[in-house]
Length: 310
Image (cartoon, rainbow, N blue to C red):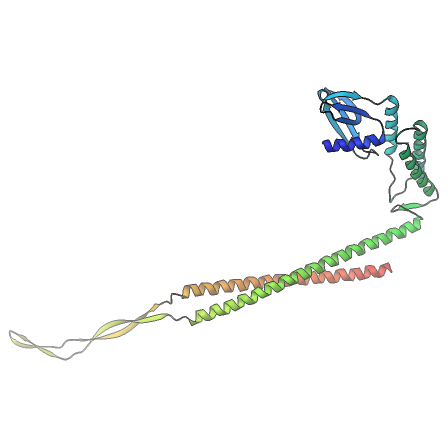
């Protein structure tokens, strides 16, 4: 806030004498006291042409001294603030009646306040408004701070619109070219990553294909006919024919290679990477196609706009 007040002081000191409030801190604030209510001062600070202003509320117990405008100074400031409300524009001329009214007001100010601090500024303003009145009286119109005939202004507006469209088109085309170059470079990097991922996938699949599992047969023993044998008993020898047991392969047990699980996971990871890179490339290619189509349209519009300017 202190910086804002300082700017206000500089502006006011260049324009008119004004009310001055001295604070307990020793700071002097220069502006216009607009109200004194509820134990406060309302001080308005404006710049040289009253286009920017701010209001500061100050408690009376923070103010040690007040120096006010004289009635003549206050009247001069009020008159100057009134004429500052009228401003010329770069692309629109003022009506003749408005110019005559402002010129009269400026002349009256110089007559009423010939020795004021802002008198040189008012004279400059009077010169500008008198010049405006002279041009509009001749039927001229304003465009970009230039005085033209109405026909010339129409042509100038058309040309300015063409130039604006041309510049906008050129900027859009340049932006598209940069985006295309950026996406093309990104595509090259993704394509390189895809090549590496496909190579890794081929290596992983080759390693997996080379793994061999260990199998062992499962046997089942079945009896077959054997040779008769005689065994002594109380009653003599007894003849017994024992069965013969022969192994038969009924199944096999597979012992999985301990590297197979990791190898299969590696293949799956490589397949996922390849799929992701291919999807990314497809997206980039589609985006590049769209950008190139837009660039073609933009360049065609630029060509047409350029031909229209000729």
